[in-house]
Image 1 (cartoon, rainbow, N blue to C red):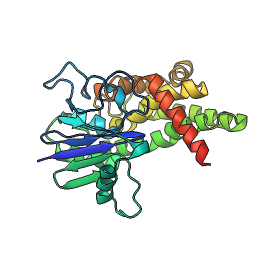
Image 2 (spheres, rainbow, N blue to C red; image 1 turned 180 degrees about the horizontal axis):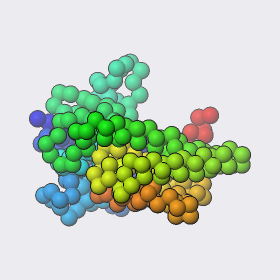
Image 3 (tube, rainbow, N blue to C red; image 1 turned 60 degrees about the vertical axis):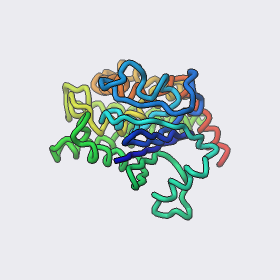
Length: 288
């Protein structure tokens, strides 16, 4: 059985191992001296422990949900980086084989190959990984229908209450009214999220209490970005806001997610995240 997978925000990686191939995201401004060649990946706690699961340094990569899911499942893999600003022909061809409309497909990450199958879209890939490797590693989807509902609802809530407003703050810089409205929206969203987390599990630290789940896999890569980029670009420190406003359950969740090995080991430095986000925002402005 062979598996392969891919992700790419600005750059991508192709993973290949006896059973797994992965295309993972590469940070646009990598730190360290890790080569762009292939290196074995391994979940902390499994053989080959003691080094980053992505090789000598995790900072080649942009945080991605499928990367975290692979590590949580403990599936060995290998990666190869791909520059999304200069996409290789074979990468585009591979993506087209999985796209519902290959004639207009715009190659992006992630891509997961498992045997003859080629899969795309982060959420779908993570669900596939959990189903395919259900007997190993962390159980990311609990058997309880209510818990699965809470995971799905939390993912939606994060996007609307925190993810969207946090992004708007940065894009609103230079427009005083829009910036003020975005800050107020994020503050409201963070307060609502804190109350929501308390209702789901007052003890924490994760959405399902002590159980790390698909809720964190799908939102973790985004919260680590925003905790680094929003203070640097918009001057709004989300952790400090939690402390000031007493949003301690939300702060607990943020700290637990960002310290999780599968999230930490796929996260570039804060400086790299900020530089990458600034670059992306400049490109977006140039297309308007």
